[in-house]
Length: 181
Image (cartoon, rainbow, N blue to C red; front, side, top):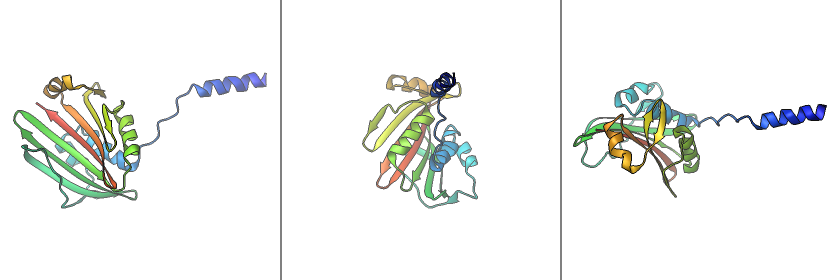
């Protein structure tokens, strides 16, 4: 009887889903400041705890041909990891752009791609040796992957978002861009 009880307990436990691994502090900072704000520039700035995120002169490239109306750069050390944030908003023709980028000093591409996949809820649509891309819309409180044929409709709706995880030397870059028409 005891063997049957142990067997049923083991079978029951094997069917339980294990909790998802916790995101690293660096990815958690990215998700909180860039992702949870839905790449809204004002919300990004409001999400920055100015006791943690200090002004930095570091800037980054914006989109070629875009007229940039606002930008902010900040640096922070989360745990033992230095992070640099650069966010901006602007326009190009009929499109509005907002971007939020965090450079993680010494970050590992594979680890951050795995975290990005768990956060997005789907695998990257494209993945190369040093870059993974996720394209999605926000729908019903969740991220929904979109294909190229859906980009224009997504931009004309709630907005099309691109998450790129890339390796730049020893650093990993987490870049979230939103396009709205």
